[in-house]
Length: 89
Image (spheres, rainbow, N blue to C red):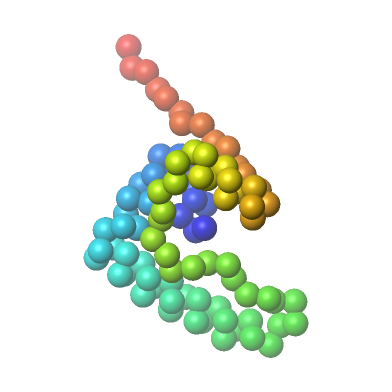
């Protein structure tokens, strides 16, 4: 989930590519766990807090049909972004 919270589709792609590099994935996982543990400790006494939906999973590749099917099954909210292209003349 956190991989797609970026400003551009290029940033999303870069984050996904970085996430599957073993050394980067291990560091990211370690840092995420530390942050999550600190947050959970700080929020444990808050009655409004129900937890996070962030998982330590590698990105998965789906065909468009598979992705649409999954999105429908989980009743996902889909954010569609376009790639900004620039031309230099």
